Length: 368
Image 1 (spheres, rainbow, N blue to C red):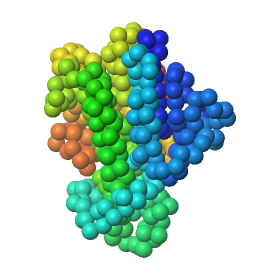
Image 2 (tube, rainbow, N blue to C red):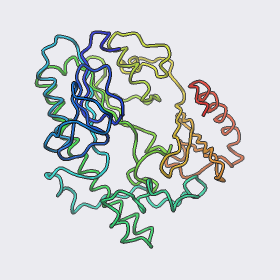
Image 3 (cartoon, rainbow, N blue to C red):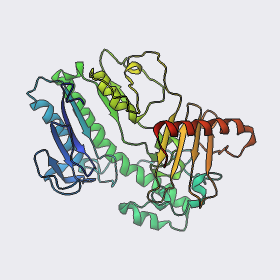
Image 4 (spheres, one colour):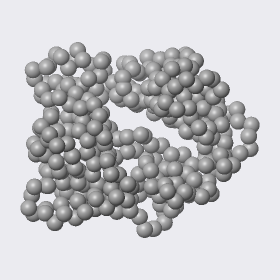
């Protein structure tokens, strides 16, 4: 759609899909999850067998390589067209394979623990399966590089969790350090080339993440650290520097927003909404809730729910489980430690949230 609106389009970095990128004048993407060192990347024009194989090895550290090619594409453009460039980093996705320059980082650091690190999940969905969710719990982390560390404290869950939190965060933040440097390199190039004066920059991710909250790493659960995603926007002359907005926006809003900014029409069947008025600081009617659905995968149960600014309702439809509903008052309990679904005091809120959940499921056609 952006091509049809007169834009030159490119994507560089993580693709992680089986089908060949479409709608791009240029692409350079990694097959599958890729590797941090000497990764294979597939360029437009190469034979596309599938999303897991093929490509050419590009020497170096992946976060650096992606940035170098993104900057190179911007520098070498000869077209007078406006552009849309998507720069997709693997970092800080596991495994924790840092650049050599960052291996010594944080060796002597001790990080503050999250208040919920030793959560026992009482009264909430993870309680029943706490001993088997290796794709979520730091105490039984399944990352290959940490298996020996986890085994050291296999009989002591508290020691394992505290030890793994410190070990995991050092590995994670070493990847973040490279990401931070390279985002800076890209932003510096935009400034030095003069492009930043008329370029919308959106920094986000494909999901939120637990970094020790509730004793978890990874994502998937509908709790706040996983549900909330980073979203930073720079648009000179439109977005007021340093401003914030607390409206409930979604990843689904990105496509309508970019089309709106580009002056293209937004298809009526897109489920998201353009954030452009919000970026301009306008007060406009906006959604009161967002919908979430995670389909059963790995060892985390299927769940779907709705979040408003003050409450969250999560439903676990798994028949074999005894706990099917979680209700949280986010104003009084931002860490989501107290499930209010069975509390008669909150019967009205529960009924209202259930009705809202069904309304939103019907709206998006989620009948699974």
